[in-house]
Image 1 (cartoon, rainbow, N blue to C red):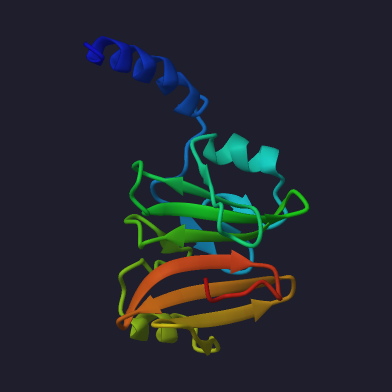
Image 2: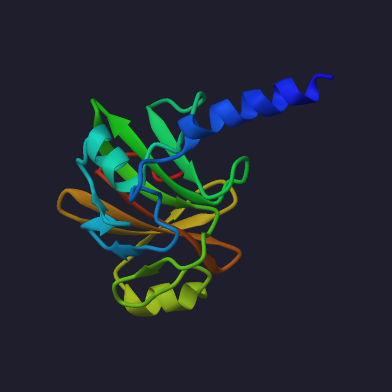
Amino acid sequence: MLRPLLLATLLLAVPVAVAPAGAAPPTAGVLVPGSSLGGLRLGATTAQVEAAWGRAYGICDTCPQETWYFNYFAFQPRGVGVEFRRGRAVALFTLHSPPGWRTRAGLTLGAPVSDVRTRYPVATRVECDGYQVLVLRRGAATTAFYVLRERLWAFGLSRPGIPLCR
């Protein structure tokens, strides 16, 4: 007998989780090294992030800084994320190798690490626990190419000094 009540509760909850029209996390996007990821730039405010990617995000409760995750499907980790400090984006990143993402130069997630090295030969290597990061440092931005099992797994863009190993 609880099913009608459960269904009514779920139907009432759905509108709260829906992003405003036109604002949704990008299901495909472009990394412009040193500049932007998925149409957002470092320094974007929380309001600018919501305007661009919507309100359908989860807030990390174990992260040291305020971090929002925009997952493509509930309870599945694929999507994009943003870390804030003092209400401004200090890191933008993809999560779990979402399809359709590429650099402005055409490098796609899933590409072999040799393709990253060919396109960005000056990238330095940082070792993390179980994966590597190839890093480009340019002025006020650090571009990260996350590598797992010799494949490009994720993109990141952050302010200098923000930890690269996530």
